[in-house]
Image 1 (cartoon, rainbow, N blue to C red):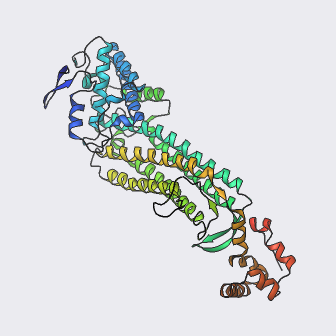
Image 2: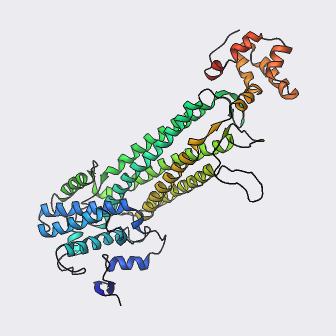
Image 3: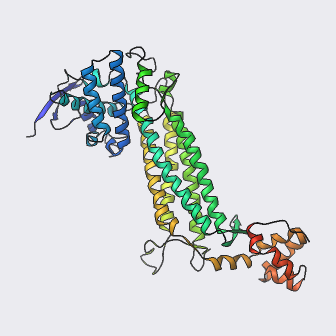
Amino acid sequence: MEPTRKEHDFLGELEIPNHLYYGIQTFRAVENFNITGIPISKEPLFIKALGYVKKAAALANKDCGAIDSKIAEAICYGSDQVIAGKFDQEFVSDLIQGGAGTSVNMNANEVIANIGLEYLGHKKGEYNFLHPNNHVNCSQSTNDAYPSAFRIALYLKMESFIKTFAGLEVAFAKKGEEFKEVLKMGRTQLQDAVPMTLGQEFKAYATTIGEDIQRLKNAQELLLEINMGATAIGTKVNAPEGYPEICVKYLADEVGIPLTLSPDLIEATVDTGAYVQIMGTLKRSAVKISKICNDLRLLSSGPRTGFNEINLPARQPGSSIMPGKVNPVIPEVVNQTCFYVIGQDLTVTMAAEAGQLQLNVMEPVIAFAMFTSLDYLSNAIQTLIDKCINGITANVDHCYNMVMNSIGIVTQLNPILGYEESASIAGEALKTGKSVHQIAVLERKLITQEKWDEIYSLENLIHPKFITK
């Protein structure tokens, strides 16, 4: 039999396998919250952030005289080990749980306490020397430690996501440059509109992504204001004088980001508005990405009976019954990921709305929704870049022929012939199948071939200028 140690809480006693660094409260959480099957060990940035929080608290408590220097040293050692990722496997609490994150906070407290005990030469569970609550959690509550760690982890995760997202902007910009002279037909309401270039289309994708990157950066700044030192509800109960300011200063230095203390700790402890805004911005990005993927599927449709303006890289056979069929599987999987993110925006909205009085206990599901959304969308974006965008090619001649055979190009004749005459040409072309050129130049002789060549030169179609009679 594996050796165990006996631990107790006010609900009773449990035998804890001795190799484990977490203790009785984490053990109960594992028994109670089998929800997602995803433990916090799958979010190493969250664990790292918890380590930062506990270390900063220990240093601040030492400065304030709340714990002695030897205890603080042991807590800092344990926190550093957690920050380094050496004990990730000990963080076993499910990401979605009841208790407003208490199980996550206690998971960190117990692991750091037991690492610290061994550092001091004691055995795991000998909490009379170093206690998870009395020492590691000194001057804290789950209600300030958990959200502060969550905000730090979310900030760092957004940093990584934004870099990946910027890669998509670059990929589209490169294609915009590559396709800058590929003439094609623009469409509105899926009907022929006026000519443009494929490069302009792809450059617009890059521009819209760049706008969202800036919006995400703006929203990310909201995470820098934290409530460390608020303790239970924001009144700073059980925290020594000056502790919040000292703790946040240490925390900012440890993490390396400009964290600030909220000016109203009661408001900060209950409010989850920052998450709503960030998730809404992330949803906006997902909507845009999904729209672009819809375009890519349309533009590559065919190959004989669709738009067939671009070719997506062939990644796998597309049918178990139709030989030779290749599907746009990469845009499709990105679409589906975007649908997930859009749905998680509603989850965050409802969880933020469900807060009551001085605490929002639904923060764990907010964390789950935002962490998974950032992870999944980041993976989807990188897949889109590597397996789709970089390999797109243009069907140049096909695009050009569709433009010149389109009725939509009659719009360029408006300034010369007027709307009524141009509409008459369009109507005849639609009815007879004749080209605009045949009707306007060869049959009705409304303009000369020389004027036609000027109006429909590549340069004028790409960068239209007003041409008079």
